Amino acid sequence: MRWWDIDPVLELEKDLFPEDAWSRGMFWSELAHSRGAEATRRYLVAESGGRIVGYAGLVASGEQADVQTIAVARDQQGTGLGGRLLAELLRAATAFECHEVLLECRVDNVRAQKLYERFGFEPIGFRRGYYQPGNVDALVMRLTDPSSVQGTEING
Image (cartoon, rainbow, N blue to C red; front, side, top):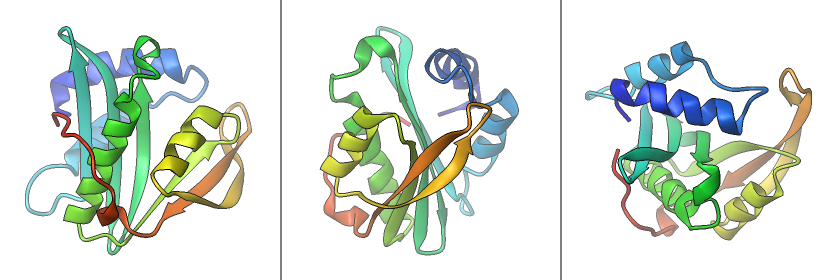
């Protein structure tokens, strides 16, 4: 993901997550940490027909990484794009030498939970009221070996 991707990413973000969409500033802040030798973030976009149809991001800290976001346009859901984005994030976690990957997922997002489970993530707890302002709980999931997951490349 580059700075010029932020506007189309924001459009997709607001469509998919209207109650708790990230702001422009949040994306800028994440991208500021995604380049150079000291990078601790990996953000990528997927394009089809000249438009952004998905994006994802990960932050690394020591031996642990956290999936910050994965989003797939409504007309692309069910095509495997979410899995390809996740596979690329797990490759990034491996490149960052992380041995564990965590994520939070809305408890009402069963489709995403099934995706994460297919990649080996396991539920380890809850964060009550994590998603605001809707006060929706998050399921916390963990993968203990991101290097074991293989997938297809996505443009960053």
